[in-house]
Length: 385
Image 1 (cartoon, rainbow, N blue to C red):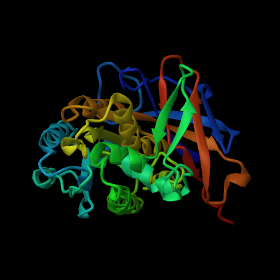
Image 2 (image 1 turned 180 degrees about the horizontal axis):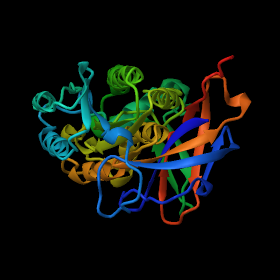
Image 3 (image 1 turned 180 degrees about the vertical axis):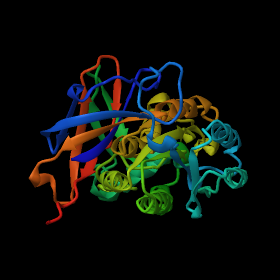
């Protein structure tokens, strides 16, 4: 058999106990596999749970990794969030081990039960994102759109300046390409302005790609480290977002990296909870002559969140949005959800035993509950006797 760890929680994030193996359905690459056993393991005692539920073997605690995407935060913007993380640290059980990863600086403290040093290092996390300077007050969504201009038939680059389209109320409206839209706002009377806007957009796209890549490299390095640490790990990722284009030809483009990192998390036996501290309102908007509207703001928020959502789900956790404050309510939920889990004994097919990443799906026939499990599993090659 192989072991598959699963969390089953109610709407408030409280673990749900007393579920037998017959209630779970596990599929590998869309093929159902037999669930032989379901052991409920809990790290901390909870008066709301039945007293006859199994304890974690040897009374062991959780292994929790605090991962801070420091490069996604402006300097000085993390004070409230780090205060809430410090409170979270104090509320962990005596047997819990805690590690700290801060990237892109690469600061790393392996999981330990001695938390004083972790706490001291958290005090030094203040944000290290460099501010991009834009002469034309370009916002992330505009930069993404500008990078698609070369393949856009309505782009100023191809000498087409305007086009019309039919809108919902059956009227027509003029829709300019992204460079012309910025020109209309910033420099309407300057005929040479579009080429400068385009050049700046492409230059800023490279800098945004560097920021995105630094976050992704930090995550990848962390997961590779965790693969060397035995046992189940819960990662609490604190990030202001990872910008990813929502246009097929736009930049930054990370391709299939979300899926690949999800597989890396599966190899590391790591569940990822992401606290997304939404700071998109302050990015580029503070100096802009016209603040983004609700639709534009929503689009930019989604571009910063989509990777975090996909990656966290693939790694068996969830993304929790924090529009204001430091995220105390989100950390409370992580404490509850990570306090217990099921360890399922599953019989794989012989064709599963190749050590490659395979899609994993877990369901449970209980109403009103949420199942969290990684979306990938690696079944080791069967050793010859």
